[in-house]
Image 1 (tube, rainbow, N blue to C red):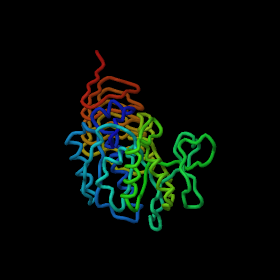
Image 2 (image 1 turned 90 degrees about the horizontal axis):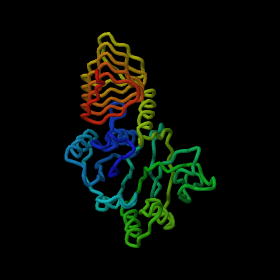
Image 3 (image 1 turned 30 degrees about the vertical axis):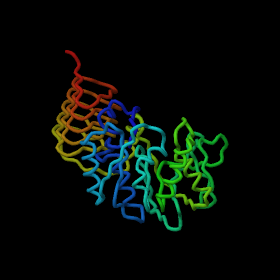
Image 4 (image 1 turned 180 degrees about the vertical axis):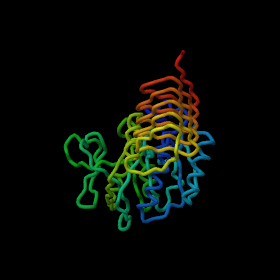
Length: 327
């Protein structure tokens, strides 16, 4: 989670991207919930690899989330972004026994449960139309035989989504340390996890594939909005009654939200404590304790404790910002 999330600014100025909400639940918590539901293992500890300037409030939020899922929280810091393998190496002391590694900026889901028996590693994959944009896995049945980064030839259409299981975290840590000690870099002159995977494969480790039904990106503002819409369409959320207000489902409306004389939805996600008056909000994300009055918002994102009055169209305002139309 150590990335800066520059493509979801202004919200990532104050909140790491994996902590942004999607229909009432943080991205990272949705990932944990998916594993709890589909994996034939119990999660006992979650190790968060953070950037150097992540404050105590973020750690407290992650600790509370871990406890909700009966897991302890451990925090490690990546002081400088030197690639995916380097990020994982920052948790080297924790890479012992069975581990799962997740790059927490996408939401994925599968109807099938996943077994990790009879494998040294399991790699989660998703069929894609344009494999040249991704790292892909070549396979023979359920067994992975090769990894190719952004292939120019159509060698496989199964993209690596950034979710990995290892039976022995020590084996992975050893190969990552080899890359760093010998300055073996890949794309972007950074230490890449796929290079460590390739070394494990050449060491005759057994790699199995697991496929997902959904792989939803939250890496940009439009992607965050679109993913929220897809989740809203799939999930059912209840909400209360509001004064002189029309609700067009699907929507998510959190606790202690006050709405008057407004039109909400479709595809609106309104987090807890928000006040909306005399406004229309559709296809938008409004975070907690925001205030929206006399406005018409579409495909907009509004930060925590932000205020918008008399504005219309598309807007993206960060936490504690105030946008008023001059009268």
